[in-house]
Length: 442
Image (cartoon, rainbow, N blue to C red):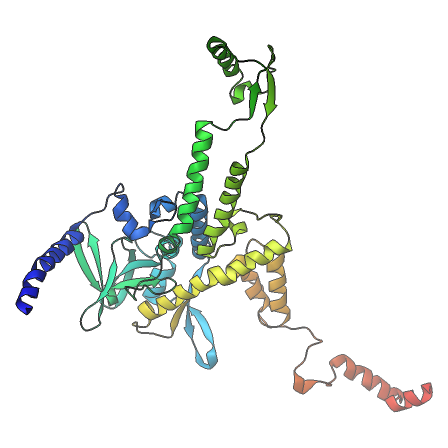
């Protein structure tokens, strides 16, 4: 019996091995929708096949990815070194700082590199770059083809990445790949993050269908603005004559012309059909629905909800919440990935990369002024450090920490200042004491 089972299973094993080899050598073209759907999404309830390229044609998807990637990449980054007593100081970071903060590779600036990595991270759930070294010295980080790299583990649980390089399959070990993994963990591969496009296929597909329906309606011009009615039946030649007359008034270039009605003809204007009004509401809802997959408030991409304005303190709080809940987690993810995958194996594991979140205040002069004033007045920053935040030159004597004089350490409460000491000396010279003064007043 076992021999019969093995004989029946042999053809299936052969087919599977051939299919695996074909899959390795297969090259996807831009027109291969089915192939892309396996990578970027799938079929939605609306009947639309959602791929990454098709999803990016939606203004909402494009805007969510763009504003997130640009917000992350626009923040300046720097290398710091941990010191004793939880202190840290900025350092150049050597070759790691040069690559990550100044020149990631020969073709990209830091803004372009981190923008690309952040865009792939929030689109596909994963972003990859090859770490190129000379000995133990990091020389560059080169973004990899994002459709090809696939992490896998061998029988000894060692992590490798397989990808295509100019038509040839290559494999890199974990030590050669910088991998930013997004939210969650893949069900079939725990080394993969989850893609918003793949899991938001039904929301994105519905939005694509609504856009297509609206485009076809306006493109075909089948929306009637009114009807002509007559009290008698028209003959075929009269219908043709009336059609010719109507064509003379059709089109936006003929708007405002006066039409003469005769022979009992009357015109009745039509309002927007309920179905069409519902379609417009569906398109509005689809914007908010798609935004949920990226954690981007609709107002961030220029869409105001019903009854919501585009300015005010409420909108300011929405932007603050987006930076805290949307941008900061991505920055933390990048910083920890850099330390774990690049810095930890270096000569100095006390180094760490940090993005300057304060740069968000650059375009808000009022918030920046309040921030610098609070930092200087409370002794957390000297005036030269504050001037550096404004790109101003240092001044002599402005490098000392200062604080408001009405604030004092707890162990010095009640201690007199120089002014109080002078007043006490004058009272003593005049023979006036506190108790005596009270007695005199009483």
